[in-house]
Length: 238
Image (cartoon, rainbow, N blue to C red; front, side, top):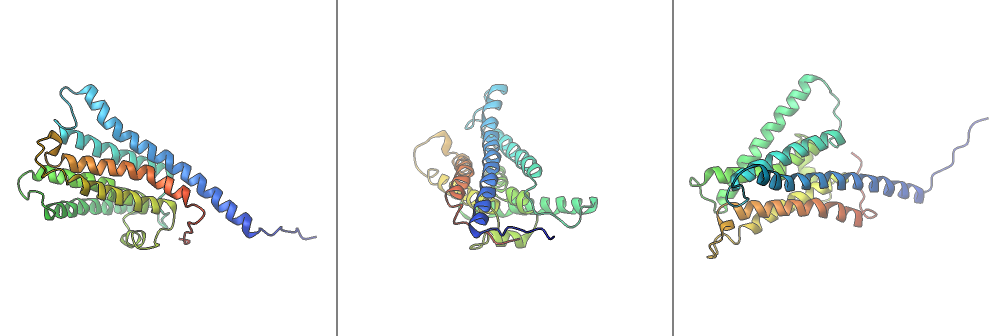
């Protein structure tokens, strides 16, 4: 006698998909909270351990610590979560090639952001180290997350940032955090030419703070937006 199988209704399938999506959203909230905490810790811990440390007075020091902390936490979290797409090859040479390509992608992103920032009015030679450090910070908020989630796959990047190209909630979070980081950096440039003579108007403090605040805002907006629209979001199969 053959076992009978109960057909799964369309309503049950939708409920299962929504439940799975809720579980993924909770994982995203945890990951994003840890990343946000790393930025807070990059501000508080040096102030306790280092003399005369301040976000304004020793801005480059804060910028380097914040960049390194966010990069390390992103890499660790997404490695543990296993968000990146699986690869057919799992050999040592393939892993080395992937890491090498990721480093090249990141360096190219830093140079690209540096060039764009200069084209938007940043000093070309004066304060070049500050400008490049700002570019590295932006790359950490945007490109590094793409590398952690999508890998060094140019076609996947183009797909994610094209219309209706997201295939998972992590792709959607990339779209939101990347946009919020860039918009925050752009908005941060507005107070620089104003004659207020404030310490945070020195290049590139307001831009880096704007990018950081935009990135943190994106970390919280992404899961909230996805949760609010979870029933309407339909992702294509990979």
